[in-house]
Length: 203
Image: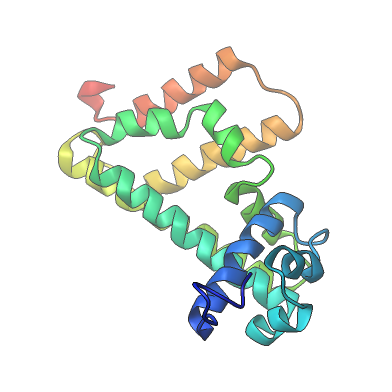
């Protein structure tokens, strides 16, 4: 129950965090339009007014969810970069079509970011763009680390390389949406991208 923890009532910050965690699961699983505040409240064992008191509106709650998911995406990429000795090899795993399909499948943050871009609420579209920009920046930082270690070419602006990586991700989802994918071609295109990212002498 959201109202108690070890027999005591949750503080305001903990209550918001609990609601936000439940909302992330609901929005990711069902999408914005199909998610109901009553479903989130029921999962927590509280009434709808409790959720509204903490986040105001459904769209405000969704904005908070998008911001939190962007936080998680940035932390995830940063942690991977901190523990990888070769950014190019790390990208070969992150950009594999199998993982990308999972990250853009039902319940994953990629699906939420894409849905936000088409939402009718301006605040949600802005949050979606903000999440997208922050993810790009995290990819750029990963590539910058690769430039320093020598696994990523440094004769091209790192921001340009970041958008190149993101264009590969978006193109994959476009192909997937239109059922024009081939595992053999996907691997070939990934290898071509990695060759373009690596220093010329390693390509």
